[in-house]
Amino acid sequence: MSDTVTSPSTPLKPAELAPYIQHTKIELGTTRDEMIAHARETVEYGFNAAMVPASWVPVVAAELAGTGIGIASALDFPTVGVMTSAGKAAEAAEIARLGATQLDIGVQIGWLKSGMYDAFREDIAGVVRAAGIPVKVMLELPLLTDAEKEAAVELAQEAGVAFLKNASSGAIETANAASVRYLVERARDGVQVKASGSIKSYPQALSLLDAGAVLMGTSAGIQIVTDTGDDSTVSY
Image (cartoon, rainbow, N blue to C red; front, side, top):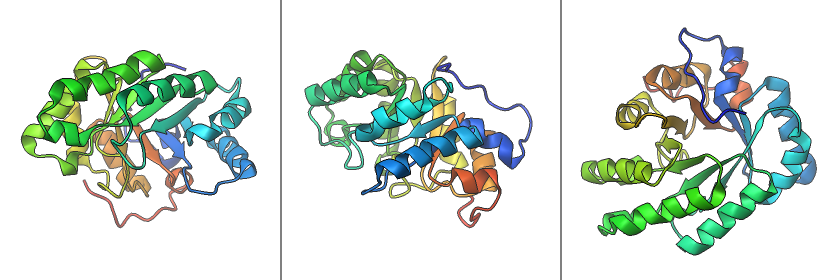
């Protein structure tokens, strides 16, 4: 599949949002049968990728072989910024070897706040080099000051990421148009934006695409594309 996703030029119907959604299943205790069912849902609804824990990548990759659908996984998550840089790079290479085609990573927020900009950049760059697949960086924007946000965006792009993300999950931020626009306005040529965090409904998802996101990570993808989700969290 292509590393680049094209933004829609016209408003989309619910089912037409599927190619922009990364169908996510990261709950603790998920079984093999549940992961296979998740992969099959990804194919059935035409989602962009199945987002799964690294330990399940081989099972999902085997299920999705030949479909053209991506296999995404996350690194240094859900507890963000706790891995060593060397360990992070090694795990990135292993996840790619197992069959992942995309990788979302946590960043060292504490290093950023400590002014350790070179270390922050190199931590990301090491993953980019080792993985050899598109890397999306989870910036946790609500945890940063305005100056830290600007630095994080620039350093991540200097490190070679393919995508900027507003946050790792809804525990940090409900994905919203303002955060997406912030990243879109600062993205360099070739760098795109993925939205993440409590994306639950068709109207909310549409607002994120309208703001410039080209991918959305959510476990509510089926509810979104069937327009049966909860729209109480919409933020335009």
